[in-house]
Image 1 (cartoon, helix red, strand yellow):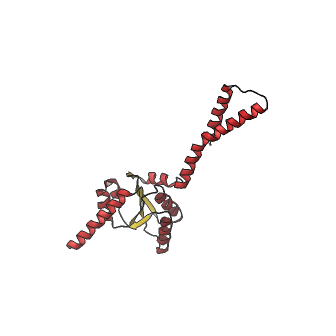
Image 2: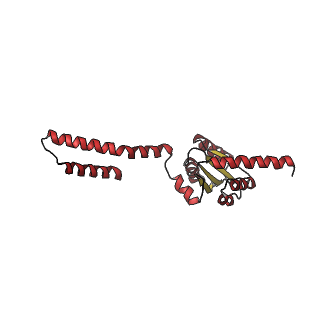
Image 3: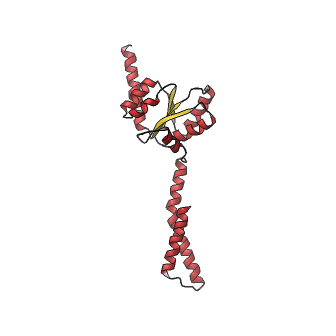
Length: 187
C-alpha cells in the first residue's frame, strides 16, 4: 500500500472519529438487499430530519469507533454497513430508520450510540419509538403548564363559590387543588 493511500485512510479515520464523537446519536444498519431507489428514498427521509447517512468501509469504521472510545460498537461493522447520525437530534436517526425498516425488510438495524454511550439493538428500538423533538417539547410544555391550569381551576372554583355566597374553608380549597393537580398529572 502506498504512503498516499495510508495517509488518505488515516484522514478518513480521523474525520469519522470526530463525527462519531460529535454525534448526539448514531445507528449502524445493514442495508443489504435495498434497491438503489429504496436507498435514495431512505437518504431523502434522513436528510429531511437533518440526519447524515454514510456507507463506510468496515475496517475504517472499526478504527474510527475505537479511536472515538466506542470499542463496543466495532463488532457491528460486518457486511454491507452504513451509519446514520445526527449532531442535534438524538431520536431522529433511530426513528427514521426504524420506520423505514418496518416497510422494507431488507434494512436491518444493528446497534448504535446514544449520547456518547454504545447502545444495543433493543435500546436503539426503544429510542426509535419516542416522539420527535417537537413532540417531546410539547409534552414538557404540557407538564410545565399543568400547575398554572390547576391554579386557574382553583381560582375559578373559589370565585364561583363566593358568587354563590358559600365560603369554602382553606383546607377544602387545598384539597381541591391537590385533586386537580393529581388529575392533570395523570393525563
